[in-house]
Structures are given as structure tokens and as C-alpha cells.
Length: 622
Image 1 (tube, rainbow, N blue to C red):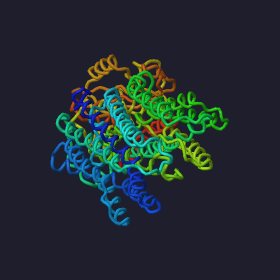
Image 2: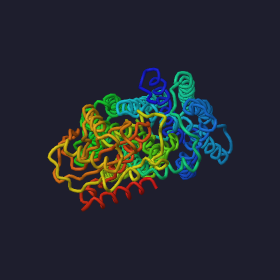
Image 3: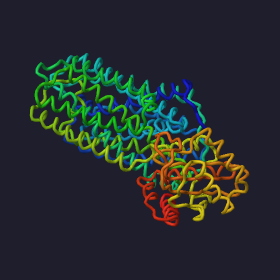
Image 4: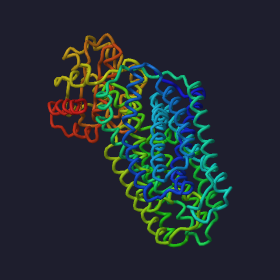
């Protein structure tokens, strides 16, 4: 199955993404403000309790994701449509009540407010988790996945900005610019905005259910233990968790503190100027970045885009901090640097969303089952951990609420806040760079082979550990050659074909060589990073087999990165629709292990090459 992006499916998906972030932005920014300004509840009790609740909210996400996956498999319903519909209706009702708390004793109001927040978090997860998880079912080819991830991110930005505008024009403009962030606000204004946001959420859920009729991947019934293994046992998913955690912490801290830079300008700008010099550029650049994300990846690579985005965030912020400390910051320079930071953050977020979708396919190969909602909850968990960390870093709750206010800030608080922001951004971006370059492996040509195999074979998805068509069963030491001296690609293929014939893996060398030649006319033997994987399948193959050669001198095999190849894997498989995907997928995963290809190059014998391949596969699929 390969669902292609079309307006029929992309539009309702964008609408639900828009509503999701609209409601999230509204509650995150204004619920605490509502409790302290309208109900006059003491922040002494609210802040620590809500931090604990926020932590519980974070932990619950994988369990809700697992529950959605398990219920969908048992009851055979379209989990994305049904769950978003139920979540949209329930969340809209809860949202209205959150901003209409009855007047009672203060302790009762606190309990009631906490209960409503828990209900909101629970029902919001029913929208949040499946709406992000859908990115993994649009198709696994790069173009489709990159476009749909950009769409969902762009729609989220629009939802975020809409609520900001509603708050600005309804709450702040009606009151005039408040003298202090905690100035009393009219409860009817909060209630009015909550009705708008709840209406958007409700209508978008209905529209999504009616128009989003995309086919879901065929799946077997997943048990809780299997779903947990695809989550906690997926090494790449855990890498994504830490990457996104650092990314979101960096983003939330910067967004919380960005106005502190504006108010240090010599001529302190008004709230309108801050809005149009900071928020508008951020919005415009964000939308343009997401719209161009696929094209940027097309002419570079996902790896280069992520590394560039991380460096851009770090360097832009260091420049901002340097100008700030020298008291030379102007609204023009601030606006320009905000644009660069928006570009960096948006490229980084789009990249990690694509990575998370890739990890679901990787986990399906590794464990034999597909659990989209539970796996995608890792992105939500890390984002919420990031916002929680930002709340802790913020010495005052006003860091989140002061989206437009430029008065009433203590100079010591300002100095400490900017320095905290600098430390957090630097640590997070450097950590992202180290983790990505050293541990993430699903960005190369090998994983592209896996994704293409998933798309092509569709329903014939089998776990690598659940069948005998794995590399170790296809490998014979007699078909492994150490330090082969060859002058051409044809010579290598003929030598390895002789070895496959010798171990009786093929019954016709002529037919096999013909099939290999036809295959290489369509796609070159070279993959990337000095590795070539020519392969063929047909009735001329008796059983799945792999012949391996390390070359004494690299040979040009037409690899996309133009590097000559010194590791050669010749694959022969029966034409049964299953063996090909297993062998190619397992070998690709093995060779994607950081540093493993170099270990094969350093091997001193055919026996050592064979042993290392077998041990690596056993380790990956144990």
C-alpha cells in the first residue's frame, strides 16, 4: 500500500493539525493566566501542582498510544478517524468548561481546575497522537513523506498563530495594554476565545472524520508485549526521543524568552512593534520553510538539512546574544535573526517528524508488527518534556504569558533569563549534533532501500527474525572472499556468481548473470559509502544466498555519492515475493550500523567477515 498525497486527504489532515495546535497553544498560554487573574487563585499552590500534573501528562502518552493501537486491531476500525472524532468532541466540551469554572471555595476551585486540566490532557491525546501518527501511512517514499510532514507542521504553525491573534485582539486589545502581566482580565474575554477554539476543534474533527477515508496499512493483531517491544526496543526511536527532547527544550526556552531581547533595545518598542517585528516574521518564514522543505531535501539530503538547521540555530542565537551584550541590538537586527532562528527550528522540526515516521517502518522490519500511535507518542512525549523543562528554567511564569507585554520586568530577572536562555540553547544544539552524527543511522541510501521495499511489497511484510530468509541463513563461508583482486565490475560479479553456483544456490549462471545485468541497467550496483549490492531474483535461484567480497582496490560501481566501492554483496533470491525484502532489508540494517562497514574492511580473513556479519545480525534481531 502506498497512499499518495492528494488534496482530498491532505486538506482534512491539515485542518485537524491546525485545530490541534490552536487548542494546545490556547491552553498552554492562557489557562494559568485565567486561574491567577480571573479566579485570583494563588500561584503558590497552582505552580507545583501543575508541574506534577504536567509530568504525569507526559508519562501517560505511550500508554494511550498503545491503547489506541490495541483497540483498533481488536475492533478493526479506522483508528485515526474514530479516535480524532471522539477526541475532538470530548476535548471541545472540556475546553469550554475549563474557562468557565464556577465560583466556590478557593481550595475547591483549585481541585476543580486540576481535574479539568487532567480531562483536557486526556482528551487532547486522542487528537494529538493519531493526528501525528498519520504521517507514517501516507507512503514511505521520500517525496510523499517529506511533503506530508511539511503540511502537518505548517498547519500547526497557522493554528498556533491564530490563537495568538485571537488573544491579542480580543483579550489584550479590549483591555488596552495592561500595566502588568497579572492585571485583572475580564473572564468573558477568556470564555469568548475558548468558544472560538472549541468550535474550531469540534468542526475540524467532524470534517476529518467525513473526508479522510484513507486506507490504513494491513496489520496483524498486536499484543501489548509486542507493541512495547517496538517502542522500547527500537534503538532509533530512542535516539529520536533524545533529539526531539533537546530540540523542543531549546525551542520552548527561546520562545518563552524572546521578548526579553526586544525590551533591551535602547528605544523600547511598543507591543504592536514587538508583534510585527517578531511574531509576523516568525510566521512568514515558518510557512515558507515548510513549503520548501521537500525541495531543499531533494537538492541536498535529510542529513545535511538537519545538520545545517542545528548549526543555524546555534550560530544565530550566539550572534543574537553577542549583539545583545554589546547593547547594539536594534529591531531590524532582531527581526533578521528571528527569521534565521525560525528557519533553523522549522527545518529541524520537519526533519524529526520525518525521522519518527521512518522509525515506525524500521521497527516493523525489526519486530514484525506496526504500532504507529505508540511509536509516534515519543515525539509528543519529548515535546512535552521540552516544554516542562522550559517551564522549570523560566524563573517566573510570565515567560510564557508575556507574548506581547513589554513592561513590568525586573532587570535582574532579565539578565538571568537571557543567560539561562543562552546556556540552554547552546547545550541543546550541541547535544543534538553529537547524538545525530554519532547514533542516528536511518538517513542513508541503505534505509532508502528498506523504505522502497516496504512500499513495493506492501502486505508481504515479515519480521526479519520470524523467517529463515535472513543474512546468516543465506551466507556460506565458501561464498565469502577476502581481499579480492579484480580489475572491473564484471569480473567481480562473475567471480561471486561462480561461488554461488559452487554452493548450489543458483541453477543457471547464464540466467542469473543476465538478470543481474538487466537489474544494473535500471539501477547501479553501487549504493553509497563504498558499498555495492547488486541483486537478482528468479526461478534460476534455488535458495536465498549472499556472496561477499572485500576488494583490494575500490572499483567504480555507479554509486550516487560517486565513491568507488570496496565492499561487494551479491544477492540471489527466489521469486517468491518475500525473500528479496528480507535479505535486502536485513543487510541494509546491518550495514547501517555505525562503523560496521569499516569493521568488515578491517577483517583479516573470509572467516572473520562471515563471523562479523552473523554476529551483527543476531545482535540486531535478538
